[in-house]
Amino acid sequence: MTIARGSGASPITLNVWFMPNAGFQTRSVLDREINEFRQLHEHVNIVLTIIPWAYAWDRLMAVVKQRQRDALPDVIQIGSTWSRTLAYLGALLDLRRSVVLPPTDDAITLAWNHRVPTGEEPIYSVPWFMDVRVLYYRKDVLEAIRGTLQDLESWEGMSHLCHWITRHPIQGKPFYALGPSVRKEWVLMHDLAPWVWGAGGQFLDATSSKAVFHEEPALQGIRSFFNMIRQGIIPLVGQEGLTYENFFTGQFAFQISGTWPIERALNLQHPEYCAEVAEHYGVTLLPAGSAGRATFLGGSHLAVTSFSQHPEEAAAWVRFLTDPTSQLRHARAIGMLPPRYSAFDQLFPAPYQEIGGVFRRSLDYAKTFQPILTLGTVERILCEQVDLLIQELINHRYTDELLRQTMTRAAEETNHVLTLYG
Image (tube, rainbow, N blue to C red; front, side):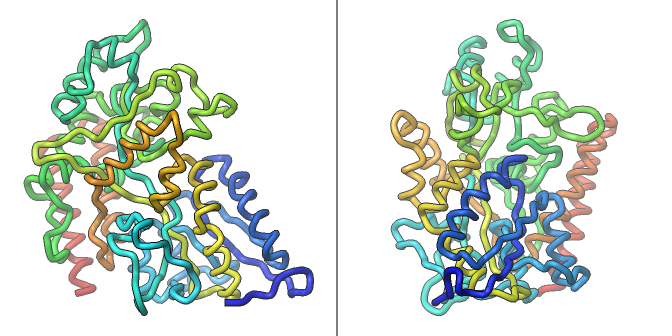
């Protein structure tokens, strides 16, 4: 595909909707990519809109339903499981003639929802970055409580350590025991997934036609997660939900995370740097549940919308950002992982190869959600019901029976949505 370049081309503007992948520094991180892109496409001006994850789905639905008609996005960042739904709704362009696919042996296929498209298959979105959940731990804390890596092999073993940490200061300092994932105040399906899968459960049945997260053993996994919140192992704060602090700010002994913040929290020159964490952190596989070890792989894709007035330039922007050079540079800047093995390995040079090996081995245990048409809606249903449970925990009204009732209600709503799309 040829695009006019240089000062002779008529100027155009691309509206781009991205998430705050680097917090308050998201715009400055992306400015570098925009400047690099504009050296190749001088006539393309990019207007960047940062939309928090909590509002992204609703904003996209407002566009799809034509409730928003001005400044429609040309390129969007979406959750890795959203593209099928948005394509069904007619919101995405097919990019199979516009993007360059990675070699088969270089593509991390889970990031492509299990399989890189071939032949004439449509491509509605392209992986930009990914996360695969591992367990960060403080080596100094583990040593102080006489714990071992063997204790972190199972949820049960780690739970014992977490209970001890919640009751005792360590080296004169109180620690939160376990952070579920990144800094936020809500719980997602992503957070529940390792617990559900580790207990031998699933969110949907084998045909993806019925919810089963309200049944055993999935319910047992969710129950274990909420019990750790109730017992103070995963902390709550105030009336807003989960605490904003995290492992990398120095308040946690352990954290489940898919990030690799080598240029941020682990960088001596960065404002987020915390010496006690950078000097004492370790990384290991997520603990195994009663049914085995499992971890979650997620990430973000890029897509061109069907509303774009400049689809060729929009596709060129996606092609640029998903090129290995930009992809690796951006993943390193935001602390995430590129979805190619070659770039993945470059992210962990000596002396970080051992840590890279943990992330690599985690891919062997990683799972993604079933790519159903209504997944975005199912995620929203479950998130809303889980949020109600969090509020009941804060108000000391949470019970196991309430958990069962709430998950049953979420399952009934999910099943209704599933029947609508056959």
